Image (cartoon, rainbow, N blue to C red):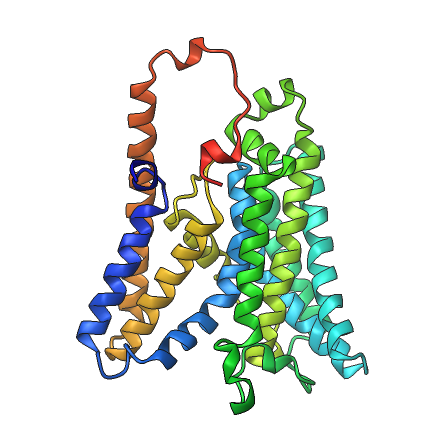
Length: 338
C-alpha cells in the first residue's frame, strides 16, 4: 500500500475521483448518467492516444510541440485519400504512415545533429501545419467518411453490448501495449535510462540515438492514430484543427506524474491526467460555466502538478546526499513507475 501511495500518479487519481464526485453532487441530473461516462470516454480518446506517445518522449527526456500539427495533417491526408477513391483502411493507414514518417525525421534530426527537442519540434510544428494547409489547398476538405465515423460514433442498438465505441477500445489497447512496452521490454528500460542520464546510459551500452529515434517514431505513429480518431469525430480534413492540442497532451502527461526532467512517467498517469481534463471540461459545460473557467482550472492543476514534482525530487535528493558517490545504476521501468 505504501508503494502505491508513493506513485506519482496516485495524487492525480485522487484528484480525478474528487473532481468527478464534486460535479456529480453539483449536477446529479445530467453528469451522473451512464451515457455521460461514455461521452467523456469518447472525448478522451484523441488526447489519450497522443498522450501515450508524449509519455514516451517525456520519459526519454524530450518534448514534442508538433503533435497538434501532425494530427491536423493526418486528417487532411485521410480526407484527400478518400476523395481520390481509396478505401477507409488505406486512407487511415496512409495518414498514420505520414505522421510516423514525420516522427522519424524529427527523431533523426534530434539524435543525429544533437539539436534541442524544443527547437526541432517547434520548427516541425510550423512545417507540418504548413504542409497540412498545402495539401488541403488552405481550406477544409469534405469527404465521405465511409464508416470511419463509426469509430467514435454512437453505438447502434444491435451493438450496445460493446458498451463503448471502437475508438475507446482502441485507446485502451494502445494504453495497455504502450505500458507493457515501457515496463517489460528492453526498449522501455532504455527509454528510462536515456531520460534519467543519457551519458550514464551510453556508458552502460544503451544505444541512445536509436532509442530517441524509436521514441519519436512511435509517438508519430500514435499521433497519426489520434488523427484518425479526430477525423472520425470531424469527418472533414481540417488543416487548422488541433491547434493547441500539444499543450493538452503535454499537460496530461505532466498532471499524471511525468517529470519534464526525464526518466520518470507512466502511461497510467497520463491517461489519468487526460481523463481529469475531460471531466473538468465536461463538468463546466454541465454547470453552464464559461470556457475560460475550465482553462483557468486546468492551468492551475498543471502548475500545481509541476510544483509537486519539483518538491518530490528535492526531497528525494535530500534523502540521498551521497548519491553522487555511488556507481551509476541503469534505471529500470520498475524503479521509475513505468
